[in-house]
Length: 248
Image: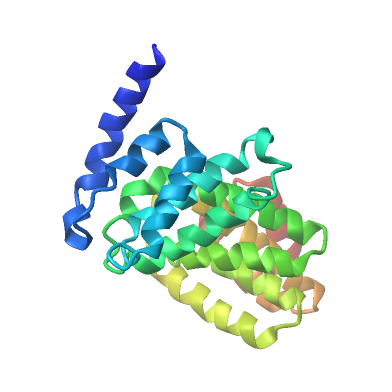
């Protein structure tokens, strides 16, 4: 398919999502940012979106922050930006502006319209967070999962991973606060089968890792109780079942 035609089709697909609730929060639809994003002109899109965030008339609008997040995320996947000092932390910036977007989207008018993006961003963030945990960079892991809870506060697995990261740093008061949030979001989830694949995977991994942490601390009963939260959904996973059998 010719490039121009592909861009036109993408524009038509994105436009209804963008404009459906735009007037509820802003008089702008930000079609200029949409065109730049669809054309993969990410640097210019970031520049223009940032200008909007600095103007009094538009700095409270959520969409410019969302476009900055999406553009930084795309840039983070491109090798040509690896050595560019302006974009070396693009993955981190994608999370930062996602969090800013969620804070501006006070009525939650846009978040649900971009589920595919949140799934992709969650997958990237959890991968980085797990890597930091494995290498013992607990403060960096905490930063990743803290950002995740910032833009997706209904993500129970992110709260549990944040608590685990804080425990690794001996920030026990902070960890307890995160556990309270985990219990709250977990209780509200309802049917786990309705979770997106990224959220479901993160919840499973969080239950495993947190239960292992408790068991290593000699708190086997608590580890068993933690893992039981996922027994109905995750027993078909070999790692989960092995730990479940070991604890029981």
